[in-house]
Image (cartoon, rainbow, N blue to C red; front, top):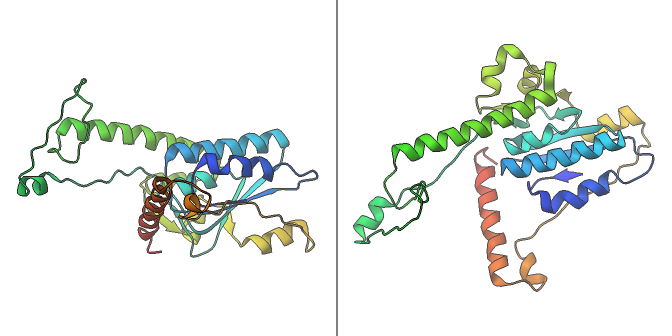
Length: 247
């Protein structure tokens, strides 16, 4: 099963399908993702573990170019984790990025008018001056999500993690394959075809399951222009995620 776009709705049926065959020896999870929503990552990982525990089938997870942030969260659904020496892993942290347009609208002579019921309804409005209390609240939220992420990694990797390097592991930094192995973030350096043949024999049969998406899918299937536009915007956002890792 391949996972790139971290969206539970698009992968739910794939997860069920991956665990459906009889005489199943293992499910292989191939991750190539720079991350995304922590909720989507958690939902996907939880669904994989639920199926694996119910069917008593091991999950082998392989990272390709990147398994970072939500991508690494997804990796932790595996019982064994592998990567290439040049794979980028980790980024166990939380980020929030935006722009401030107060100077721009001032130059344009535009007045910003906000009317709310609830003093925090305009939280982090990009067209208003940042408020200290908004930043404090944002950091509280990020801290809670970070704690959840760390707990997921600790619960799944357990004693495999190098406790002496906890500060580095959970700093939000990224690591190449061999360094990630030393930290305990993965179990070894291996590629999927070679390891599966070594583990299950040269005649091992593999069935690939995955979702392929196209920015024009909405229009080609009779969807609205708005749907197609959302797909294009999602593609741009995805491209920006990848660019953080020089890919």
